[in-house]
Image 1 (cartoon, rainbow, N blue to C red):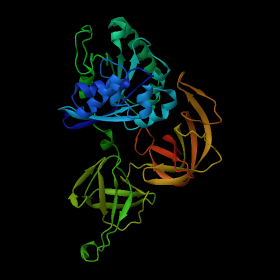
Image 2: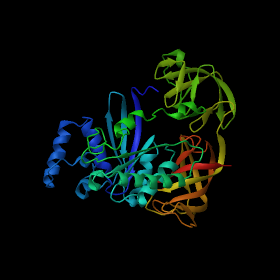
Image 3: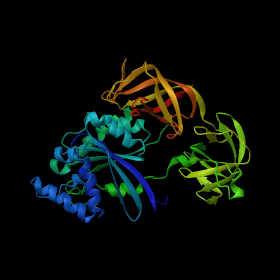
Image 4: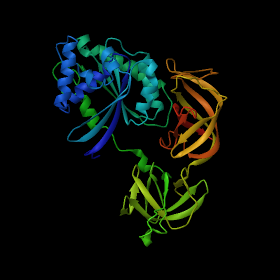
Length: 427
């Protein structure tokens, strides 16, 4: 597959002090994508700390509190490119209290780098982040056993961690239908071993460096191969009285969340179930014959259909479910616990609907991967719930379509996002 000019989004995750920020700093440094003024700034900060070498983790720890404490709190996004492709890196925090930040970062990632400290092996956060990455639909994993320099580059240490992680990975079966790739690599992010350069300390490892693995990773979105889903964001009716050609112009604007469409294709409008055909497709003022996910376009139909924001254009036969009641897995993000008596807002694609949490089934203990009984949901909890809506939404199960199977819950009084959810059972 040709990866030229492709974009790969990946996340680095793992436990505290596994070296995630240092790894990203090493990738940026060795790929020569650091601006000189940025490098000068982190050199000054490193010297203030009494360090003899540049602390590369400072490249991603952008908050003042992060630099002072030497930890990652917020999700840091960094960008770099090679002659082959472009990358967006999400550096997620390792502390348990910031699990919600990790969920945000993983929701759009195509690959996950799970870092493990060679001295400590698999820890609680290793399990937690592996579980969440699988739960959020990531199917490409790279397990980076870091700080190999602190165990004298010992091959047996690496092999032991690799075998233990394989057992853990196989035990997490949140989506049995998904096909996963799993690579293991020993490295020292601090010294640069096996990140971009191989160096000479681990000649017993014959696999690819981290950058070589990333260069080969599949960045092609599967959304374009899924059924057509086009949530309506805006109905365009130009008010240009001088241009008579625009008097009857009426198009439907939005982003193609999945699939593709071309002029002449038959479509269905949901929830009305009215049918029509595509008359024209625009990107800006440019007329195109075909569009594909994730393009934002404007679509004209051959028939006058009553369509408004929150409706959805789909294929005739392969359509999403129209539902006011569904089961979902949520990650609670708010400091305030879930209040089952309250009415919240669900934001799903371009649809906003009032919602109540009708049932709490259980919570997931990510340490043991077991379900535990629950009567309340608090910050960072992962729970199985049932939601009842005042207005219907058009949705798919999350593992069938990440775009139309995901949603957020918003507190109507504060307008704060309190939870992120994945639909797993539609009625």
